[in-house]
Image (cartoon, rainbow, N blue to C red; front, side, top):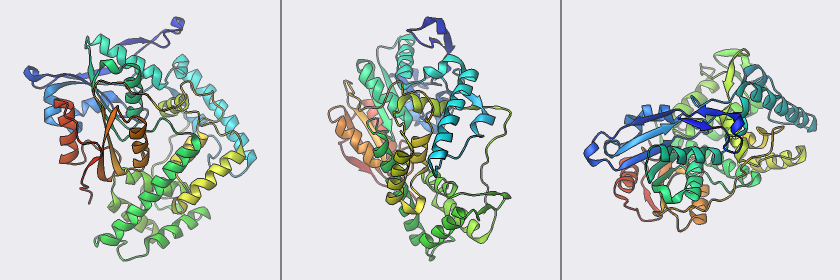
Length: 433
């Protein structure tokens, strides 16, 4: 499907938006089209739809044509790309002084120039508002007066804005693991730090009650703090590569990444191996000769006005997140938010609370212990959209709710298929191990 890069600037040309449709397996009972986006930003909706048998129940697959798309700048839709040599060759994003801050700003300008050279004009037109225009154009192309929509994580940002700008064309909307579009930088940094602290506590409790854990019966807080101190001194090496040192941020990111599953057994095994000197596989950055996809950064910087003005502001926010979550040194997500857009242009569509307008309230789903989209922020969206949403909590952990349990699937499917709204504020019990 061809779309203009900018309807207001036709000379910029068009791009091909990649699409895939999984047709309803029971055409006689077909309800309509369910458009899906798996988030990221930067995840492929095409790939998500290829895996539709894993991602949606048989009933949803029977009743809907499920349509996935790669948003502009992502995957097969003219992706934003940058030189790996420039991307990975910059200074640290964990800043110690004004000199480091200024160097990161300079590198941000250089990286933006490099990405623009390799990506072309689409890099300036990847905001959520641009994507929402594409989704409504897709609806018209499909000749559907209304569509249903499922968005996961960043896909909930698309959904909120879609409901604001084109709510009359939405039949039903499931927003799974909800992003709060109304946060400023300080509130965001504090929120994800609280989520990191909660993830750490959930891991500690799991070790305390799980006899099969290699850390059961041990002081896991002291053990973890010992590893963090060792990493801070530059003494913690990757067991599979003694030439590479692990930082406190590597450890913190490992915790919150595994919390998104969650797989506390995996985290405990890794921590035990590092403590005992065993083998732990860590991902490494790519080489310096290829192009690296950068859709996530381009989209977030188009949507967020999280521009730290100077080193003093950066230091104040860093101290805040460290006070909130001292065992994890704040949150890597918070650091990314503070630093990834430095040196780049201003946000094109800065974040603000949406004013969702749909005939039927949207269904909001969120885990109680989600390290990526914190539960308190999903609740904040519910309060902002009191007449436009209903909220259901999964009482366990992890990022992504629909497939967590029979209960979460049933609540979602009843809404999508029968337009049956669950009681607002209801919950599904945890099935986490």
